[in-house]
Amino acid sequence: GTKLLDVSVNDENGFATVTMNRPPVNSLNLEFLTEFCNVLTDLDRNKSRGMILTSSSNKVFSAGLDILEMYKPQPERFKAFWNSLQEAWIKLYGASFPTVAVINGHSPAGGCLLAMSCEYRIMLNKFTIGLNETQLGIVAPPWFIKTMQNTISKRDTELALTTGRLFKTEEALKVGLIDEIASDKAQALSQAEAFLNRFEMIPPIARAYTKTYLRGADIQELQKNREKEVGATLSLVAQPKVQQGLEFYLAMLKNKKE
Ligand code: CO8
Image (cartoon, rainbow, N blue to C red; front, side):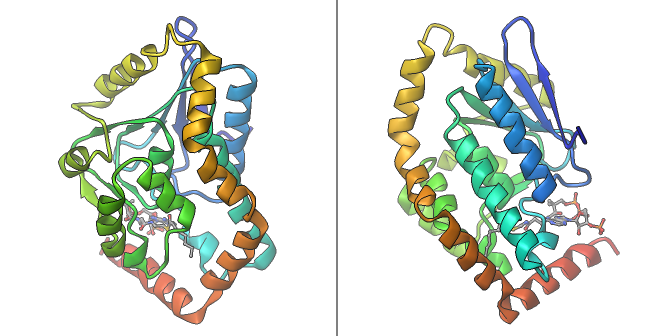
């Protein structure tokens, strides 16, 4: 494959470490999301004992959706892209095996969605995480919001989303957006294994059904509306005001360097 993600399985405990590797910022485009779906399908087929999701960068976990997929969208490409995002979320949020994110860098927007879709989050210091969509003039879809409400309270979700708040590591811990802080990646990975080890004596089927009872309704809500949402999102993204906002934001990202 093209290796936008690296998968390594520990033979002793059966845990898979999935390392996102699309430099420089692991932004989520069609090719990345398609490969991610394939990785999740394989783990499920192989009855994985657990997955750790992390990044090959030491600065960015994931910068979220690739803004270039939304800027001047080609309808067919955009539809395939949005469909792959829906599919990736359904597979990750609903994964039968236990999942944990080792957030070893910034994790805005779609990056935060990936982390929240896991069951547990361990984050390194000096980074930020959150759904900052409103800051870009775009709107986090209902299923992004449901995923945050599955993690923190409805009240804290409202406060965070209306302002597009990015939380610093300590702030994220305080509100429950992450579960543990780690001093470095090696430490974080061993904390992640400790989390996955909690399920050693738990029958996988009982675990999986319980997770479905907790998360299934959110997934069904999207499932029954998938095609409609793809079309609605394309219409929203194609609006001149949104396009101007994205253009401005892209320029801001570039200028930041000079
Ligand atoms: N998409 C595309 N390119 C990006 C993205 C992105 N999301 N983020 C960064 N890049 C590019 C930069 O433009 C830059 O490009 P170049 O090298 O050509 O100048 C390169 O990646 C490196 O970026 P930085 O120099 O900024 O790297 P830093 O390490 O200094 O910073 C950050 C990393 C903190 C991740 C920073 O890049 C950043 O804040 N990025 C933007 C993150 C963001 O706001 N993402 C939101 C995406 S929208 C989303 O995920 C949900 C959309 C909801 C649906 C809406 C439907 C209507």
